[in-house]
Length: 135
Image (spheres, rainbow, N blue to C red):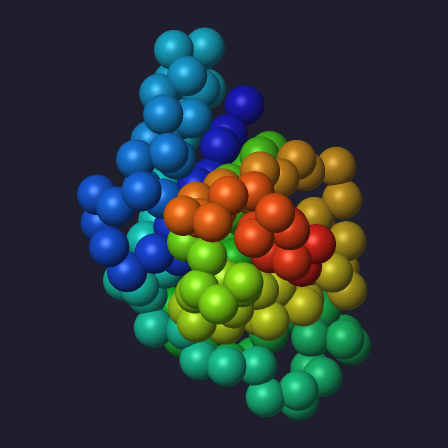
């Protein structure tokens, strides 16, 4: 099984990173293949609603860091979305990423995959309900 962890926090070693590392540790102990990407290390442009992803091959035609992330998402069986809670939502970088997942909704490449949302919040679980709902 392949696990892809996407970290939407700008702070390496922060709460989100630590929590996701614990999940990955358990996955590795079970023999799963794990990879972790920091979204802040990738240039991700906003979706411009060109709708190219809704026709033909259902791919996004924006040329940026998502070109390296899309194939990893395709290969993964489980995707972990890690983001701190910023004003009851994900970080800006994670939101850019979510918007750019549109081709995966159109081409059904998410079908059958499992997802985990990791969103630490000083205010507790209720404060993260909107993030969870967004995913």
